[in-house]
Image (cartoon, rainbow, N blue to C red):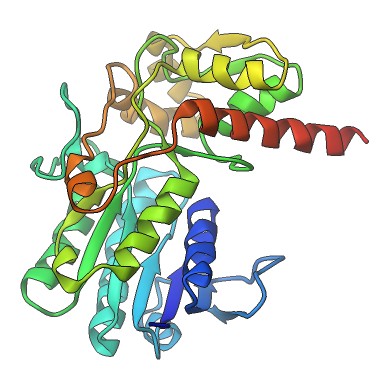
Length: 317
């Protein structure tokens, strides 16, 4: 049955969410502060700042379901100031209009772990960004448990995909290799690390859009391909475009020092627990209920590398 879907945020994940909703035959409104340069045909745009409660409620008017694919600047202080406020506004919009809400989340709230990440892990108060994600999780879970709103979280680790520049596998990995340069890795090349393929995230969003209400009020992990090392992922993509996987690693011991002169590196240093040990995702819960055939890296890394090679060729033409 066709529904009206409001998508907040139009980065790589928001784009795949919009595309999936349209493929399912729904009408779609995109809402964020400024209009993107291009939108799919028949997609409506509603300007909105997610920090403005009344604007969020207006943007969600008429929605059967809401998809949250919002991102803020990668700064702990910004996250602390913005994320709880934004989530409170989105919960209010969901409750006001009786619209189900799919929150596309990351996995920071699990904090440092030495085993594959599961939905049932306790929320962590480690650091700044993980603690903020835990606070946001408590907000939507409390609203769902109280029956105020039907909300679910779709959690994904670092993601990648064709044309996805703002990803560890994006501009600084395959983008560099496609241009004949060396890929700089903060993630340690020999340590297995889970990545979610953006089209798989879109597929999972579509699954939850069509799922019954009992799928809400809980978190789900996006199915990920069997975990490989970053070096192996790069090698797969590099071979597909006829390039050599040239790699430069940033030693972990350099991160605190780099953080003294680089705000971004300081933020990355806080999250070193996601790449100083094997980082694996357990998505058996989603697989048991829905599907688990995530795109293998042999296909995903190949398509991603080829997309960056095509972009490099277009710029050179």
